[in-house]
Image (cartoon, rainbow, N blue to C red):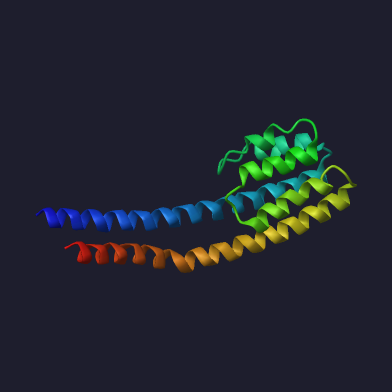
Length: 162
């Protein structure tokens, strides 16, 4: 009886570990999807209204729920350095290409005319969208693999222990 309980526990733990990996990857994909919405909103706000960069951050990040955007909401003084810091603190575990693209936003947002800002944001949007599509595809391909390997690893551990 003890062997049965131990075996069930091992299989469950290894499956849950694999599920946690899939959950973390899904969260990254959702965060990047939300960033796509933020950049699109920035483009439309620059196109149709005149806001400074601080108002833009407040408007675009205040209603987002996927992660804690408080660092972007607290930007008040030196926009380029505070934006870079907010990117590093908020997206430390996200894809490096997305982080690099978002960090570049501080170079042109609020510094040039609206056309240059829209052009820069469009380039960032294209990069983030490409990364999102790639990671979404990779997640779909690997989801079953991770879960199957987790259960299989649990079974193998049970055979070794028993």
